[in-house]
Length: 224
Image (cartoon, rainbow, N blue to C red; front, side):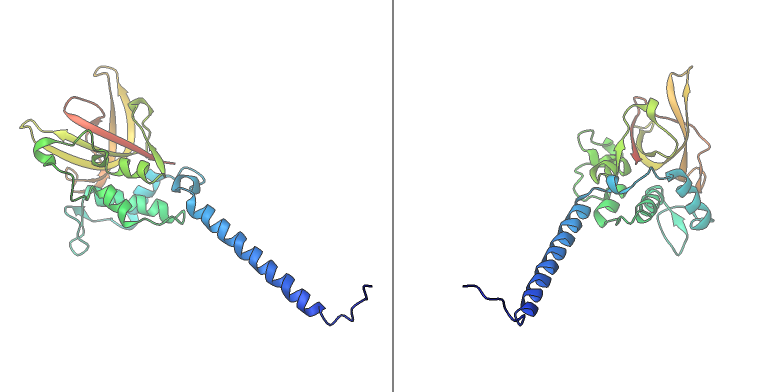
């Protein structure tokens, strides 16, 4: 026959329930953390960032007075890819997303195994790493690559390679400041904002860049 207890075992029962609740809370925390860490950067950025606005902000507040050249804080020299890298870093940090060493190397095209002399041979069309910032945006899932030049917008990131008349190649990276379609030339042209040799610092380009042509390879990326 069952008898009613005197209540002395209740504290033990309560402790057992409390332990189970703690285990459940810990499990929920782990599941939540895994879910958040598993989201890609694109999903964590709730709304499209004002990349161009941030780029102009950096020019005014951080790089004002800096001149074009290999990156040097002491000399206040800034090259094109380092400026673009700073813009990407700022966008991600404002959304609490870490800008990793791997991301930075992808933006800077800092790879030891590219396997060719890009100045003499141009970019390898089979190797997406030559896309620099556009490649990084897609690889690390915080945006998309734009292949249709009619869809290019201000604030998009650009990495391009252009062949000189002597056959050698050079690369450049920046952001799209404005874009228009030239009906006469039947090509899209863009003013670009970044650190340019032609302006000796961070400015809007004085030239309009053809976004397509036989003498160039153009990569466009958009953070969203």
